[in-house]
Image 1 (cartoon, one colour):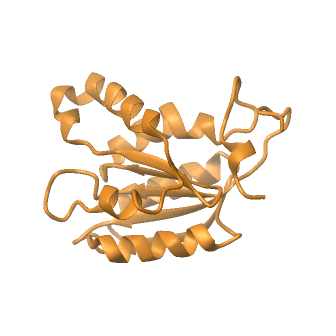
Image 2: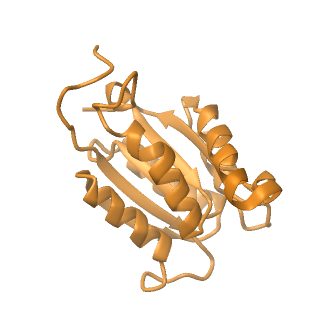
Image 3: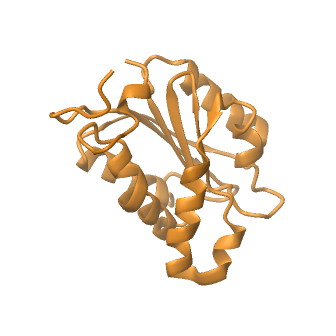
Length: 170
């Protein structure tokens, strides 16, 4: 299976915002992710706002993982250290494989922006049922850092030397 394509291949993406207080109207990070995914040529097939509850998060992500319609899940929020930050605990049991490099690179890039405060980010990613899942902090700035510097390139089938397309469900 080739790692790189000569043509753009759109991915089917679901966007989740984990929050205890934001509404759809106030979901600037979710809107940002929806917009940049669409602008890049991918298709947003689902969007949800989920409460800070590991079982609610896990239930929604599990539905998307099981669906043939979703190849990529982008999650914003719930990756910090407060009691409500439950995303890593919700996701880790679902992963077939964790993508440790995502959190490492995200924190490296964030260090340039926010210094040692990046230690409190528990950004995480993994693969489950041929679906790639990226979870990042809930600020729009953090979403922009993750999208522009990591995720966008890795969802582009033309990205060399490799990208996630060969690993996604068809």
